[in-house]
Image: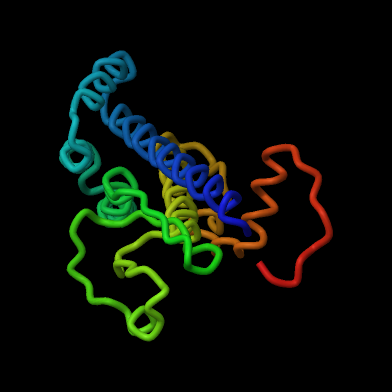
Length: 209
């Protein structure tokens, strides 16, 4: 993967991951409306999206859901989902608030990263041994890390959709296996996917990324 290919892949995946998080918030809004009469759905949606802070959104849904469904079989499933979403919301914040930085001397897949404004980590041993490599904070998110986060966001979205089906007394749309994230692809596969998305004809396979 060349630096130019990685540049495109990095920002493509970053945008894709943030967009995937939007699906999580959309499904949370649908769950919130399920706690009220159908005629009030629009008002509930307006109230939900008027809350700017995500943790406040989640707390809002959590309180009304427990009030509505306490004592039912849905509570335990919701608590698991709530904790999972609450944990991964920190990753969403990293995608939105970390700054992008280039490390052109690093190997493919580690040339571009999202890094925190202030890092509390220590310099890696590899960097100390090789002064030609830039210091990368241990919290850095490279392209495969961002894809792994996107896959988790997708799995959460699937879990929310299936949960919403159960709330409505409908069959689940997705298989249970889709509620767990897939492993991120290799750098070589990421490169090929970018070229396919751009409409490029792929050349002969390479032995190494």
